[in-house]
Image (cartoon, rainbow, N blue to C red):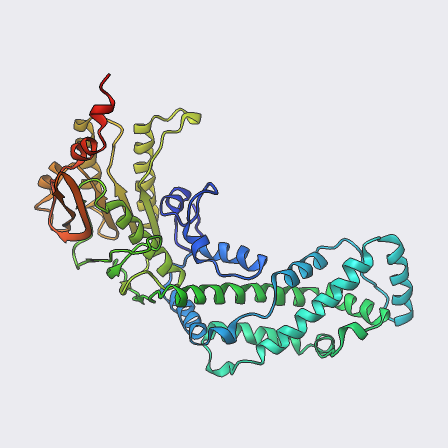
Length: 447
């Protein structure tokens, strides 16, 4: 469970919503949205994606920064290439020593000694110093592009830190070098000493900032390119969630849907036949919440959200033979995990797709009712349950906090037709047998 004052979300939820994938096959949200240009930027973007915010002020601060970058994306594009930053990283992890002498003659002698001691000294330390000089010069030019006073707080703080470091006497001298190739051996040894010893923490801070800027410009580019919408963030103790025009990012021609949790309604019971779009909708809803709490835009026309403390899904529970769990017992343990999350986090959003598929209908019905009645006691959370057991709906019809939606379908010339639109009410339509017949399963099973 990832939790450091951030949105609590476990590995299974990240996998089910396809934010990340355990395997390398198939699409995932992270790869789809990644626009970073450096290796370190990608690593930092992944860390950012693993830690969505829970505080409204943090989310709004990130939104403000991304909105500012979105308005002038070309100006904010970092000038550091992947190759340059990789070489700077290699330089800082190099094992060859820096000079320690405080005078030029001593440094010169040390430099000659290191060239003998370390075969890669010239390639690593000397060329690394040149690469870092280039990085420093480009960073100095970059921060001077902006009128700092007109920027959001998050960006102001970043640029202030950069300018404070660059204004250091030694670093300022280095950043004003006009012709790096003209520098002599003693000059480079001296600057190497500054970079990897005297001012190492300052230079590594600049490197970290370069990666942060890569992350922010990547997130902003994604918002622009995919035409995402920044949600309205509200800071309320009770949960609040409204979405209009929601769609799934993986679909080339998506059908959008609206769904809002009205005041006093915190449990959605979702029905509809197989293939009607329920699971895709559930995933898109979870993804929108996740992206909103990253401070990013979301795939929707409009969204309003009071941030949650935890996001939890149970869509594709599998057996776990390595620890002796059957399919049904794995489902039970997943529900237990949900209950433990509720006890700890309170303000949660939970998504369930068909409880207890791994047992008989009677136990599935009774078990589902037990879970539903338990979840209804928690008005600090919001819950979505998709189920084919429409008989459950009759038992919760009179619950004031429950509302019902369904995905529609029709049959045309013996073929199911889906419009993938969510509607108010319930559905008891069953298309499983029709689909089996259309796929000629019976004929194939005939000897």
